[in-house]
Image (cartoon, rainbow, N blue to C red; front, side):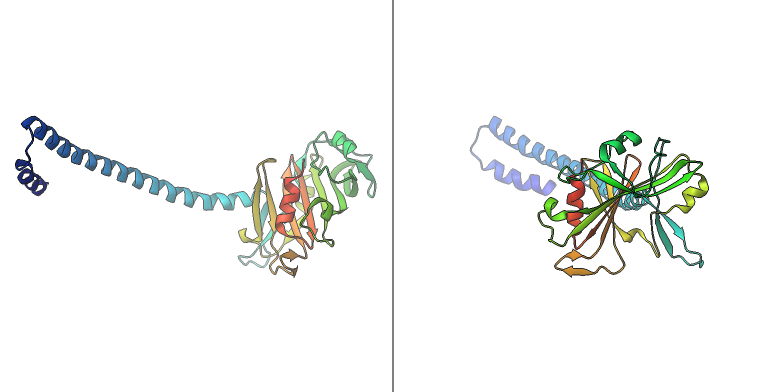
Length: 263
């Protein structure tokens, strides 16, 4: 700083300006230099703080991602004592309701199903057939403790423009009820795969429904042609009902697009 002032003073004495103007110019330069130093250190401090925050957030997001994926499935150790885990997806539990009249193999209209459950069931308005087939029920003392319903044969090419003429989809709904015992809850499993880790699923968040969609990744993904997979499984929970959408000769993006259009 001293060298800067000495050099400037030599140049300054040669300038033919009034003493008042000289003094003003000199003070401005010196003051601006001090201001620059303050701004420099202020900005540097902000940069350091932001860097620390970014590192913290990145570290937190990794933990958060692992926590998110375990919201839907549970990891349970295998019986052989190894560190391998099996991945289990179970149906969520809804309140007691009046559906004892339902029989396996029976079809139920969407409106009737919503009235019986007192819940909104997601559906695609482009699908003409609004009914579901009751695939399975488990009862105890004539009270339903578990139910699974299915809508199969969804005409994917009519709903998803990119779909192949051979693309097929089906949608399953399942839930447990508060009539289920702890033993029932433990035994009734919707989906199970061995040697499970956090890498077994892709996760996509659908903002409009505020849901996380879990796309199961098989250990070996088999492609029919291009990026069409032979089998894609998607799971998500909406209003305590487990939705399972299966697709054949389909891409993951097509499945996600289909879910985006659910209302």
